[in-house]
Amino acid sequence: GIQVEQSPPDLILQEGANSTLRCNFSDSVNNLQWFHQNPWGQLINLFYIPSGTKQNGRLSATTVATERYSLLYISSSQTTDSGVYFCAVGPGGYNKLIFGAGTRLAVHP
Amino acid sequence: DGGITQSPKYLFRKEGQNVTLSCEQNLNHDAMYWYRQDPGQGLRLIYYSQIVNDFQKGDIAEGYSVSREKKESFPLTVTSAQKNPTAFYLCASSKGQGMFAEAFFGQGTRLTVV
Image 1 (tube, one colour):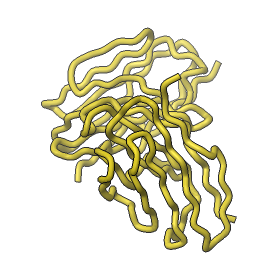
Image 2 (spheres, one colour):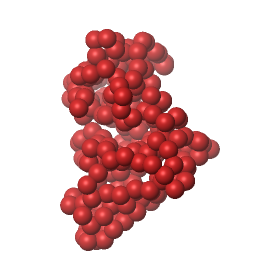
Image 3 (cartoon, helix red, strand yellow):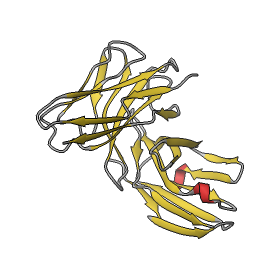
Image 4 (tube, helix red, strand yellow):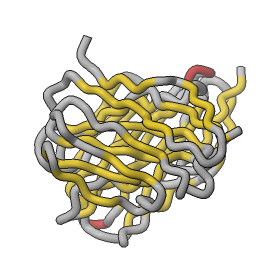
């Protein structure tokens, strides 16, 4: 089945720093989403981005489907950005969403 | 408010007992999904349903069962056959009969076997 790899697995930042999270996938996809899991376990939708580029405030994402990767950019990080960021993909021809292992982000004041 | 409601938030089960986790959505979504998350891990798909009265096994279906009698409801039963049921369970839904649409998640149920 499709493999989803996220990097780095862990990231520690000082408040105000910028960061880039990467998601590589091993096959073509019809869906790609980025989520932020908060300390209570809730998955917050960040981007639905099967291809192209989107921005939402300090966050932006780019998916290059032909090269099978997606990037999540966090600018001017805040302590509230801490948590786990998941990339999830929907493989072509399959009606399911496969998750990567996540990037655990800690932002210190 | 529209959304996905999972209940209960916390559930304790004795070994050998079956338990049922509830998932209800009022988003008028066709597709619904159950995932399991173990500490420090990603999410793994247990079961999914694209339409009422139909569902398919995901990657880790053994020891679980589901039903989809109503569009808005997709309960998950954790049976005694599930050897390691302690985990965080998340329900999701998406519009349309495929995962091509954006998926949204409930707040989860933490199940502990005591």
